[in-house]
Amino acid sequence: MNAHVAALWRHPIKGHGFETLKHVHLAEGGTMPWDRRWAVAHEEAKVEDGAWSACQNFSRGAKAPQLMAISAVSDEAAGTVTLSHPNRPDLTFDPDKEGAAFLDWVRPLMPEARAQSARIVRAGDRGMTDSPFASISLINLASSADLGARMGQDLNPLRWRANIHLDGLAPWAEREWIGKAIRIGTVELEIREHIVRCLATTANPETGVRDADTLGALETTLGCKEFGLYGVVTRGGEIASGDTVELI
Image 1: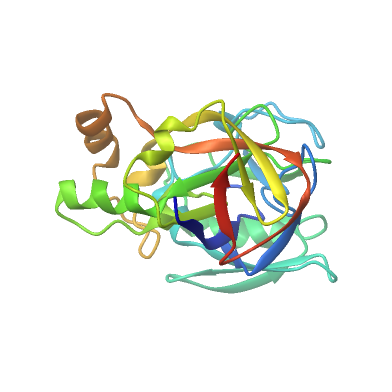
Image 2: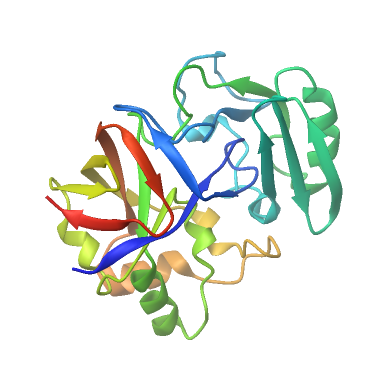
């Protein structure tokens, strides 16, 4: 195996923007720092600040595809996030203090027939991951490319909203990793589960338009809607883009 980290990503506000990183420290049992640090509860949600809640309580790309085209840049020292979208002016704000400005900014991106975004909630000491346990998500770029080839179109891997993009693997090799451990840099992760995908992946992260039947293609290819892996950090440390990946 000659795998390596092609890219590192986090999503400061769940469902609202992807942000690239060159390196990061992962703590044992933790999520990517500042990944899903906040989430946007809709008007029908039942959530509490600081507590983990299931994804159906939040505004997200599965219900509002235009959200998939948001990108983000965090300023950890200032506590701010800058959001960009092809159809909106950039917005820099403090999610803990300036939720109203964000709600005004995001409103034009929300379908009128869906529950509207109501407030930003803080995730507490772990990210508001889709999994009920603190996880790091990984995808194999070769698998994404293979799925796109079967569909006859290029798939931007940002559709999958993963933290770690892996390159140098055979297509679908990662499907054999459940229950195994990997080492990246000085970090070790236990591969816990496959990720079950939703309609968010059908939207193009450059345009926010649904333009790919990713779920149908996964059903045809694998007989399920799984793509990517959830890992749990069992040994903390540093990882960086370019680091090698090995099964241990």
